[in-house]
Image (tube, rainbow, N blue to C red):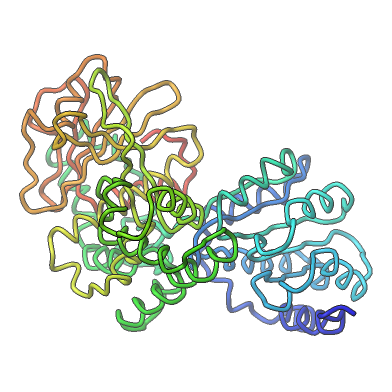
Length: 489
């Protein structure tokens, strides 16, 4: 006898899909702002000639489920029959007790198939053999279009590579960029919609022209500080709750649920306590170069092999980014020691219970560097770019925070100096590398704090080095990403 009956599953489906009975009722979860991933999802499922399923991948609370509800709202507005749209969360304890075959059979018994059907599955990685079922559905049910979400990116991508070639597309959903934050709140202080300046456009501007551009952003500083504090999580962005409540949500609903539930369910974690210790250690050392051997000594009871394994699990769960060292020109780079970023600095501060981050210059610099790295990853997500960092092998103080190598080996350098004194010398790595003829550096950017710290570097270099305030840089990069830029900064 089945543990979960079809009747129980039917009742749950009715609760999940209120538009079956009230098709004209507004869908509260469908917020107005439409992200890049939503637009790309629409393109994929509405393509006239090529049929594709879509997998939305990203960490908890970044808005994947909202995209599903926005899609439901769009389908209903287009006249799709309400009962031809099925939403199910595989994170539900009842659904976890059944397989996808029973989900489809129950749905077909409720409403015999008539016309195209849309299956919207949340947290699909919890479904047994999900990738095989998606393959079967794609091949055998031409009447079905599917969009699914998941919080463990490489698991989804591995399944896509194994079974989904030519069948589905994986779209990453990162935390909100600063531009998306401003759009979601519809801030009146934003630059006008017609403003379309990119970072590289600034390089040839005169001082008055630069001052005019800077002036368009000067009223966003308070919003930028709030963005850094609460992170790129849509629910927190639109919330009027206190900062303490935001930190509690980030600890409980993001960090704790991923580590104590998602990771334990999806991976072979032998010691949950060791995993928690490692993540806390990473929060304390975020943006710094990571040594497995040093971590093993300081954490005492955790072996280097376990640390390396758990790092992969945390990365696959979208809680951390791992940036590998890369060489630039003739300058050899430090080998085998990555930099670790917590996926959003607000998570790191919440875990460490830091409530005055904006008052500490070092912590503030860490937050901005994390935001810069995350924005760059999103911007170059659709091109085959290698994103890492540079640190000279012997003189370890010579470092460039982010190095982007394009497919034709052209490089872009980014150095974050978010402090009051952001001076550069000819011996700084970003200056030396930008002046080396065989480095293949096309452009370099120094991300600064002060509004007046904007303009070309005073150093003569082969590739231009440009100073740009962090707020401007992140807004521009986020806007270019939202507009589908192709990696040309």
